Each structure stands twice: as C-alpha cells, then as structure tokens.
Length: 229
Ligand SMILES: Nc1ncnc2c1ncn2[C@@H]1O[C@H](COP(=O)(O)OP(=O)(O)OP(=O)(O)O)[C@@H](O)[C@H]1O
Ligand SMILES: [Mg+2]
Image (tube, rainbow, N blue to C red; front, side, top):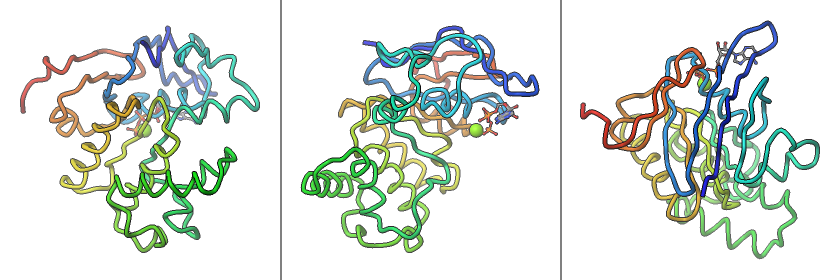
C-alpha cells in the first residue's frame, strides 16, 4: 500500500522562484525515510505540500486514495488529522501545560474528555514525559519540548508523520534519541518522513534517503546503498 505519492510535482513561489521541479516518488505504508539537500533545496516546501500549507503549481500529490488537489475548505482540517507535523521550533503553546498542548488536537476533533485523558497519558508515558504533564513548556529542556511536539503530532495516530528538521536545535545524543522515537512509529502504523540537512545523522539511521538539489529530486538512496561514514 502507498501512503504518499508525488506525481511530477513542481512548485513556483510568487516571483517565479522555483522551489520544486518535477518531483516524483512514492512512500509505502510503514516506511520511514529522510529527505535531505542543501539550504533552499526545497525540503520544507515538499513537506508543506503534504500538510497543505502550500499548493503545487503543477503535478499532483496523492495521500493514499486522496488527491490533495481536491482537498479544500473544511476538508483541509480533516486531512490534517491524518498527517502529524513536527516543527523544528515545536510551536508549543507557552501558556498551556504539557498535557493541554498534547490534548489540543483531540479536543479540536471533539473527542470525549475521558478518552482524551487516556490517550494523552499513554503517549506522554511512551515518550518519557509522564511525570511532566503539568509543567509549562518553558519549564522543560529543549529535548523535552521537542518530545512534547512529537507527542502532539502522534496523539491522533496519524497515517503519516512529517518532521521538518526535528533535531535542528538538539545535541547529538538527544538527536539520536528523537530519531529512535520516530523509528518506533512505523510498527504502530504511522509512516515517517523527516527533512534534515544533517547528512551524518541521516546516514547513521540506515533508511531510505531522498536527495533534493535546487528543487530537483536527484537521488533516491536505498538503505543498503548508504555508505558507512
Ligand atoms: N514563501 C515563499 N516565498 C517565496 N519563496 C520561497 C518561499 N518559501 C521558500 N521559498 C524559496 O523556495 C526555495 C526552497 O525553500 P525551502 O524552504 O523549501 O528550502 P529548504 O530545503 O527547506 O531549506 P532549509 O534547509 O534552509 O530549510 C528557496 O529558494 C526559498 O527561498
Ligand atoms: Mg527548510
């Protein structure tokens, strides 16, 4: 089963700047892969097309059977339930507790309070944040804050998780920890696509790597073809 497909996707920003040129690839259900490339190569743009923060200029993005071109209006929010997003700066609400930050996506979809409590606590325990649920984000370390961002992205059990430079602000030990967390998601039914310019880190993970260069997909490297450092 294919969870995501890019079909000859191009993206030109206003002003004529080409961010993606004729990009095509598929992601299988349960896959974890990376997207890498120089600054400005188009990594963030590619992820934005998946969670509908941007629209392609040409080509089609398919999410399972869903053609994202046809997803408009109210359906955008419904689509986003299926795509968890982790940002580099995690974008937590600073005046809300860890628990409330993670509960928010479930509250927005109208889930019962009892069910929300159960789900949030289970995710927080899994990410080692069980004891911190009442803390405010500012009372947490950088690594803990990033884990709250991940908890919020996975609490709704999305089919796909996209993460944009999720380890950008973290030291190597924490980065490895966060990536190990991502690696545990596919077995729970969530595919994972991570944008990162940290080639060393990406290679150590031994997963498929897509390489963008000036908006073009120039390589699609299988794990077994990743050279050891
Ligand atoms: N909103 C925008 N308007 C105009 N141009 C944009 C916009 N967003 C991105 N671009 C341009 O599109 C190209 C791709 O940008 P993108 O942010 O996708 O790159 P990136 O690979 O994520 O880079 P980085 O590693 O620095 O995050 C860049 O040249 C950038 O300047
Ligand atoms: Mg980027």
